[in-house]
Structures are given as structure tokens and as C-alpha cells.
Image (tube, rainbow, N blue to C red; front, side, top):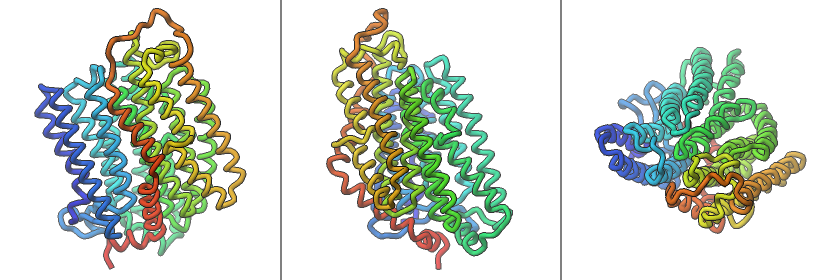
Length: 495
């Protein structure tokens, strides 16, 4: 049973290796990658179901060396939930790439890199060791950088450089955090580290370590003021790649903040949570106002991610069981919505004779694309938190947790931020599908990217809006697990 925790990592890894042997047949490479990710989703689903049914984490010890001496892969409720969420969206990202007209999707290295990106992201959620978090993060960064550099957009290489160097800064912070924690406590195993920090919280370098980890995860989730790389990056990256990086890869920071406040630094969590609330509110306003003023659909959605991550940070920052459960629901739902919206933006751009998501190009172009317009409209409602979508469930739970905690000022600011979301999403919908075409020289291509993947995602958006109970129950169970850090420590270290 312990190998269940390892399978979601191993399947895409070995799938990527085998995909290298199919380099002469990119189409078959894509089908193989789709099958590999489907298998990975099944394995992560089974892992989550097993952990939820038994109430116990599944731990794999590399080489048979028991923690804290060996490498531990830990499948607890939080890690398994995040792994399943990510792999499900990445599966649909692969499906989108198969139906895309981008030249980069036919490159021999595209699908192996996509599977390596999956391996790295899954590993970050399931590793039980801070140094291996660094290793998996670097695998994620390298894959994402190369996938962006091969973009059809002429600015792809520039965006890749920005992503790589800002990620290098995050890696430096993470290594410094590893070093200061290891010097202070002699371990990097998360469970062992949590136990030792609780026993001796007055180590001089502890505050420094917290600051380094905060900076790392703020960069990974593009939290203000470390957001500046994201709009340029997502505007130039291939649609299948930007849809993944803006929906699930940015959740690495969310995962990190949850581990920091519920496992590693429980006694110091109050200060961290206060900072997260402040940064979250700033992100909601800065991201929303920037999205309103931008000139490109993809760029608008990149700023939107900054705002939506802000809502999640506020939920984590409030720190109550209800707010953390709401933050988890928000995390899952936003991943589905944002991936779908970026795919739809890419679809519209792919139908333009001048391939671009700039409003100057796509304004009025959607009048001949009614199906994409309907899907985009539902996605816009979901981002704004309007029923019957899953976005409404996310914000309802988050606002309820704020009311229960009498956080009236923050709630008022969040309501204004939600209004901004409605403004920029409806503005984009109106410009693309209702206003007359701006550039009459731009014509509509007869074919473009496939709509199957975004349609499936929007279907999930509506389904989880109409029937949210399974996800809410799962996040409630995850929150109860997080509230008892000794469960994680005992599962990894034993009695």
C-alpha cells in the first residue's frame, strides 16, 4: 500500500522517458502522454480515496530508510487532493495541446517536458522533505521554462528568461531556508522539523527561515509584490502551457502557506496569517484594477490570477476551520475556471488570421464563434462568483467564514474586488462577442484549436456549482486533518 504514494510521481516520470522514444511521431507522443496522464489521475484518485476512507496518511520510505534519515513521500489528504487537482487539469491541458494548431505542440520535446512538469508539480505536493521540495520545484521550473521558450510567439524566449530568473531567485530563497533550518534543527524532514520547532521555537535563525520560505512561496504564486513576471510570461507562453501554469502551478505557493501555518510553524502562524490577509487584500485590488486596464485577454487573465490568489490567501490568513476549508474549495475551483478561460482565449486567438489575444485583434471576432462565447460567459460568471457555478460556492464559503469571524472590513474590500472581477470579465466578453470588429483586416480562419478541453472544464465548473457537496465534504475532512498536525507527524515518524 505504501507505493500508492509514489505512483502519481513515477507514472508521469517514466511516461516522459518512454515518450522520448516516440520523438519521430509527435501525434503518437501526444496520445501516449494523454494515456499516461489518465493513468496518473487514476492513481492519484485512488490514493486520495484510500487516505480519505482510512483517515491515515500513506508514507513511502525511499530505500527502506525510515524517516527522518531517508526520503519520505507522504500521501496525506492535503497532498493527495492537490496532486489529483493538478493532474486532472494537466490531463485536459494535454487534450488541448493535441487539438491545438501551435507549432510548438508538434516539437519532439513538448510532451516529454509536459510530463516532466507533471512529475515535478506532483512531487512538490507529495514530498515529505524540504530539500526534495527544492528538487521537484527545479524540475518544474526547467520544464516550464523550456515549454515557454519554444512558444510560437516571438516574445516566448524573453518570457522564458523572466520566468527562469525569477524562479532562480525563489530557488535561492528556498535553499537559504533549507540551510538555516538544517543548521538550527539538523533535519529537513517536514514531520521531524515540525516536532523539533515545536519543542524549541526560540532558535535565532527561525524567523529568518520563515522569511525565506515566505518569499519562496510568494514568488511561486505570484503574490504582490512578486507578481511582476507573471503577465508577460502568460501572455507569451503557449496556451496549453500558460493554462497550466496560471491554474495549477501557482497553487504551489498556496500549498506552501498551508504547510507553514498548519504544520511547520504553528506557534508562529498568527504573524504569517496576518501578513497573508494584508497581501491577499492588496492582491485582490491590484490584480483586479490591472486586469480592467489591460489590452490583452491572456494578460487580463494573468492579472486575474493575482486577484483570485488573493482571495485564497485571505482564507488561509483568517485561519479558522471554515476559512481554510473555503480556501481549499477556492483553490480547486479556481484551477478549473482559470484553465478553461485561458484555453478559450487561446481558441479565439487561434481563429484570427493574426494570431494574438490582444483586444485590438479579437474584438468582434467572436460574433462568429457562439459556442466559445457561451463557454466564456459561464467562465466569466464563475470567476466573478455568480451562481450556478463553482465560483459562487467558493466565494459563498469564504464570505461565510468571514461573517463567522466578524471580518467586516476585509469582507467589504473583498466584495469590491469581486465587483472588479465582474467588470473586467464582462468587458472582455462584450468586446469579443458583441462589439463590431476593430481591425477589418483580421479575418476568421476556418479552423483553430479544439474546444473539447475547455468545454469539459466548463462542464466541471457548472457541475461543481450545482453539486458541491462532495468537494465541500472532502475539504472539510482535509481541514480537520490539518488541524491535527500530530497526525502527520505520527504517520511519518511513527510512535
